[in-house]
Image (cartoon, rainbow, N blue to C red; front, side, top):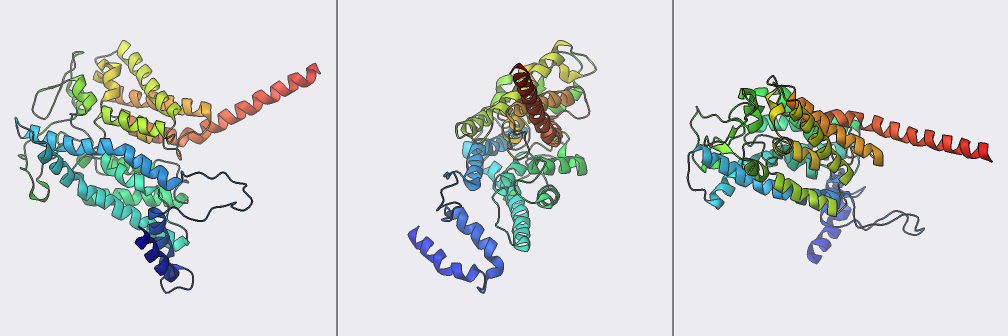
Length: 406
């Protein structure tokens, strides 16, 4: 590492103002600060600032580490679902992992190349440092999409989201909406045929020639997608092999779904890391689950044949679809979430409630977590404003009462 540090010090003058490569200063700075902690800090001599080893780069890296259990399980589950669809009785672990890796790799590369490319260009144009926000967004986008979403669609959605949701507002830390979720929403509404249906959540091809492609007539909806065909309160889901799916299968994540959203177990492991490191707010996370559970309980108590999803138990509601993933990784985004203590409870609770309302009382759209988070992203500033002004009003009344007594 010392040799690399010396080499970077040697070529650094070329990228500084006046150097022959000064136009790429932000690119070099981004690469250097990714490898090493910057040696310049504010308030060094006057000691007026609090210095901490945690910066935005390390925050993003911790979030990526928290996502790794879901990502690795997504690799396995993508291969597992493909093998189930083939009617296999044996599931070689490494073959499943390789299949999943080869399936998702082009999607991850596409998201990072397009997103980082745009951020590099904008940073050069504005003569600013390259921010690290896309380190997380770049891996989130493929994880919340079907495993075989077309690359060109993913590229268009990523570009749209980065430009119009992030850079237009000023870059990392200024976006009002969650960038990854907007990319997912763009795909859903612009290309619904490729984002919904009976087989888009199962890997059907042979990536890079690995594996056996499925027959064209194969179909298998996700558990939530199957709700539309249920006609009684005795709801039962079937997997890619036609066998029943249990609650335990749903908790482990051995079900069709978006690449990284299916395993509640892995999501909770990642959430625990975020909580232990103080990166995510436990208030938001807990409130989302509480709101979802309470609304699910209400819907289940007053279940109606018109809305098959209302027959789902509260536990199944929290395990299926992208609810748990949204609660742990999307709702807790510190940029787009509420910031006041009380506001975090309100923000998270409403996300859980709205997600279940959309899922339960809209038979045409079986998943509601994405829209719930985006909707509450819009209301987060208003929630904070109301909380702050309520505190101000309460203190003014307290001061008046104290003054009148004196």
